[in-house]
Length: 387
Image (cartoon, rainbow, N blue to C red; front, side, top):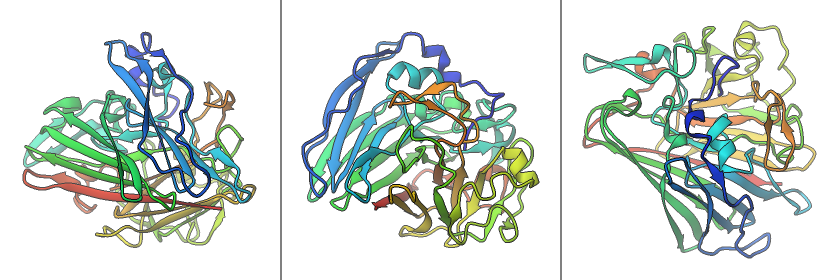
């Protein structure tokens, strides 16, 4: 899910003084089946306020990943194809300056509320809260300075057969208009099988709303390789949430049957991308939330499978969340240059964001996103790779 052309990233205010120090990736040693070791830290850049931003490189089970302390950004994620050749399948930038100045949430941790909240306000326990508005009249991905623009504390670990990072951030009461001091812990784990597991946890001292997600742009053929329209996708959902012209859900849970939104059987992403359906016109493609058939679950259940026919790479997503936002990269417009030095154009990457539904604080019929003192917000999403 992404901003449209009307919207300018609010993070540009701190862009000018963001200086890139290290653009490369320092990998731990190891081949296709191994490489487990403690994550390696390197200085990546310095923000305008003097804050240091580090990159963390880790490897396990044939998967390599580089993560930034700025925004919890997954800067690169390398997996092998059917011939064992690795490629970075996550869109991103070479420098910190680019992430701060103009990133459309490439690889970022999203919060305090992923997706849109209509008119940037909601009422909780009889009190209205006005949020930071950064997408027309709406609030998107936590507002102008969401979690994607914060420097996270990072703790590396290597435990048993797992390698990973624990990321910590404290959002103070009133930050971006949200009530309550929210203490957040997100754990990125690479398993011995090469899976990338994300565990989200948060507590609050005051009733609030929370909806955390990850905004990786996937291209399984490799970052900078061109369009994802020939990628094959299936989504385990018989319904989706239609939106208005501002991409805010209407409240309806519509059937996907007979519409471009039917991914119950695997089909190419581009197959129905140009169908003249009103919802496709609103999003200039796919930018919608699918209502997963499994609902909210204690253990991760199947959500979606993505495959690139050319490389054979596959991505299978399981989650405890009830929704999946599929965004087909509609607003990549040729103005951004990626990690590999190639220009990103429309449809050069896609997002599969596990989540609760957009605008849930204003839709009592949607699964609740309210978190109260004494409760712990917990969700898990697992990305499993194959070829």
